[in-house]
Image 1 (cartoon, one colour):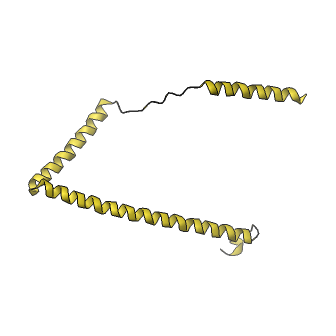
Image 2: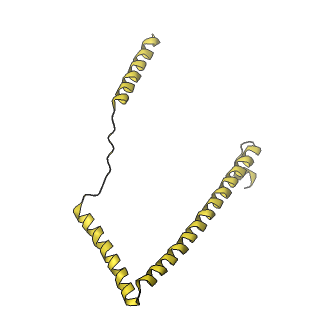
Image 3: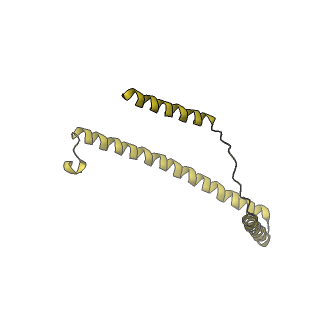
Length: 118
């Protein structure tokens, strides 16, 4: 009888659901604990900061250097905003093109675009 097959399948499903219900997740944050990697990262950051201080010391004023960096940062933020706007516009155009292609495909009765001369 096929009824026993369904009963076995139902029993297996219920057992799976019971196991899934008992599952407990213990999320942990994965930090880099490798001392060598941490040391190397710290050394690179120290070298970068020393270079900034030395460059500012040679040129005279740390405030001028900070001002130039802030100006550069503002310019890059503006450029980033412009590029994001262009990306949104390009995505809209791509969606329109997909819709037009889909409509042309539907009008053609399911024939391929090659058969239509596109």
